[in-house]
Length: 95
Image (cartoon, rainbow, N blue to C red):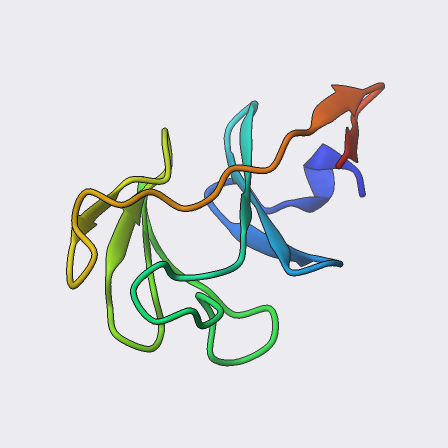
């Protein structure tokens, strides 16, 4: 996937239960799993609740920060999303 295919300020679902989250030229990749209840962060395929620098779980509304995946509101405050190692080569996201 090209980094430019991820909407600026948005999240894209990736194969293997992962998500890519982009803010400008900065990208983060996390496992698509809320640590509160072991469910995907989205309810509908490809649809995520993003509010600026924050991502809300569609099931129980725990809220996570873009910068480090840390839960800052909800049932799992202080617990981060699991990061996924990745690299960007020639504009392509490699997970």
